[in-house]
Length: 134
Image (cartoon, rainbow, N blue to C red; front, side, top):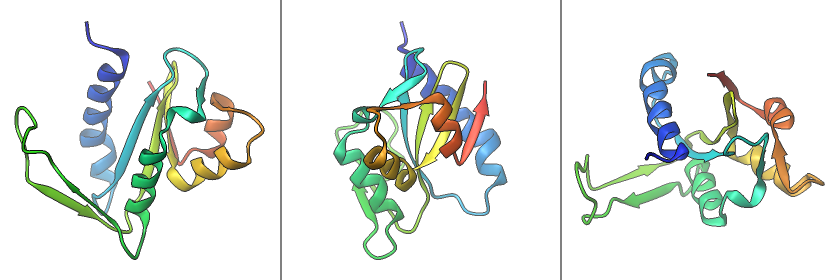
């Protein structure tokens, strides 16, 4: 049985190729997908520190981000490595009936200033760069 996160990853990849990327003038973005598992909130702690640091590095205009794709990866390997600099980076959160794209710096600011330990659907919609109903 495919996990909910895996099913959403397949759906999201299709949406990126068919809807999102055709509308963009450039094509370098970073995404970290999170799934609420049918809840109307996501715990801020679900986004790990190394994931936050990597997404913020992608946005950085001075150093950027590089990543070597493992040679041990099974299946198709598109290339050896990639580098990203000054690119948009988003936390993508799948709620029960929709998903939102929230800029990483907006997400971190909310995490650091919120009195809550989680991001509710209502607040996520207020912060979202983009809301996609499913």
